[in-house]
Length: 460
Ligand code: C2E
Ligand code: MG
Ligand code: MG
Image (spheres, rainbow, N blue to C red):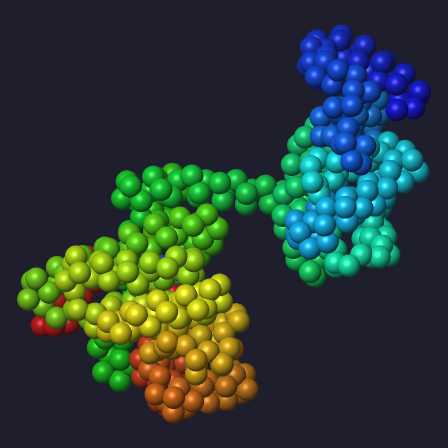
């Protein structure tokens, strides 16, 4: 640290003691035991470890509170693979190269500290005047890494937290930069990302969902709704889809579109799906026990089930327990369920189809679904996605739908269209020979009891 900074730090800490905040400052200082302690430096790159990085950066903030500061964190995608494929010494060479780039900034840019947190995680603290300077640092480091002759394509990602406030807390800046990093990490099309406040809000929301969903399951906040499916010619209900609803004790109804992606990350979706399936099996059994004939109900099967090889076993186990014939249940999967472990998923579906279950491909035409899957998968039905319907004024879109319908007919795959909201859409699909539909024009998803009442009325 240069002399000028040291003097300003001394003056600032003296002022601080007058404010009565010196205790905290001393505590931090004692933790460091002196900046020359070897334990405060990474043994390979000799860059400060996190503790010293925080300390040195805080000293600068204290000395120059009027400046604006940023923290950049960086991470190499699949650094482990570098070590595994090329050997540890090549991995070390890469880390030393990055440390060299960071040291250049420390030497040539004032108010800058570099840190090496662990393995392939580095950070840089620096004062800045505009955000472009910060993105330029990332672009420059990336460019320099490209010049390194290396037998592996190194992808480095950066998260930046540029703090407009005076006297920011360094660990907070670093956490925010890490959050921004997670937005771009491993993505080939983006190099860096600036922290925005909504990232923190989203993160907190995700944490709330993660921590509350299991309690919600136990306490009856998670319930099945059913959206009826209809035959558009007769208007009769021909089935239904089970859709999960979460009535959170404080936040009210949380949509599955919001909480399912979160619980898919943690695997808790498996619990939610099993809960939903057992409720639907139990309901179908009740209908049969009351002497009525159930309509087939669809169960959504998250793609996360593709990692377990007991999916078929579990569903068959439930069937045995509730004694519901397979014809009254349909399994809805999206193509992504096959993308993760295609071989396993095909085997599971084969077994379930052998036992009489119908497999339906959900959201066909949205995202990444490919025509190729129509010929190769274990498939009985295709659900045409509502995405198609949003663009039906486009003549090309109508050509695609028309031909999709005729192709499905020729392939002898059943079909149903999802998301019908208008008479015009209904007419178009009827004219082209697709009679089965699910959509708000007919029914919205409703609680199980309401669906039951509706079915009782229908059968009268
Ligand atoms: P999905 O399986 O494709 O379900 C159909 C979604 O389209 C439902 O949204 C339904 O309410 C909505 N929908 C139906 N007709 C219309 C319409 O005419 N207009 C519009 N705008 N929307 C319509 P929902 O219930 O919000 O569920 C969203 C997604 O969450 C589902 O899409 C499914 O992927 C997932 N999901 C819901 N429940 C479960 C579940 O129990 N397990 C799993 N794994 N996923 C579920
Ligand atoms: Mg579905
Ligand atoms: Mg769908």
